[in-house]
Length: 401
Image (cartoon, rainbow, N blue to C red; front, side, top):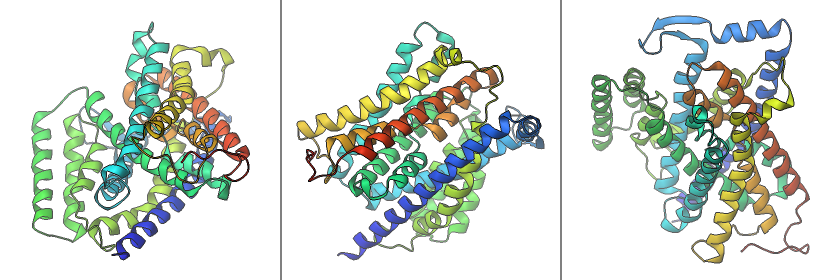
């Protein structure tokens, strides 16, 4: 009876290690992007490479495929496949498989998405042209946040790392739902029906006990193309594919575990840093501090920094005080507050949603980048400072248990 638990812990430990190290690489990729976008001589090559047309035209709606489009719509579909595998694993045999295990992460993630969205809408209330960006500050970048935690080492209790992971997984699930429902401008019903048929075929393979990954991956690629044609963002196909890949909760060699293990390094050290490098670069020529006071970047930055910490910390405190759920063991309230600050690092998912919220508006997307970078960096610095100086239990601090 203990073997599945040991395997689950090993899987989670491997995941945390990859994400933390990948987060540090992501930070470096974002810094390189800003450098490339602002160094004379490099900036022209940087932006030119992003918009280089590789062809072919896979969808009349999207036009010729560019380097940027391949990364954001194709490679990020692999990222969302990996996210979907994490979600399914946690709900089937992990920390989210029981009502008790789900309670705190779901409450915290819901509050941590709702509060930033509401704060953003409040700040931008008199500017309806940027209202569609409400979901930008609602997401947490788990890789970036775990990268900051990795810099703190043993100063952070393991329970906080696990809580951050589970909250971010639920947060990712919410972000996928938002992308599918709120950022779909048009629908090609024929392509969507075709995608449904492919998904049904994958479900039939699962039901028939097919355990080879090949058929699922081939059908998943076809599903991606049909979803790409349908008008629903193609990355949703990655999550749908993940949900239909077989898993055995007590068998580490099941198709889902094998695929998750195979993708882990590629996603953490390849796809996510590449996405960060491609999307974080913003030319700062003519930039003044006044730009941060524009409604869009100000709304994003404040919603990430203030909204996230308020939603996460308040929900954990209320849940613990009302005994709806237990606070993380071995952690103080100050450490939990530091964790809540780190959830304001939106980066990858926020930049991704920003591109969906303002298609064809590079001026607004640049403002999105400035807001996301400002809010994420502020959250990272503040969270690091709080956790770095927070006393551990037994040194005059109050346990949150």
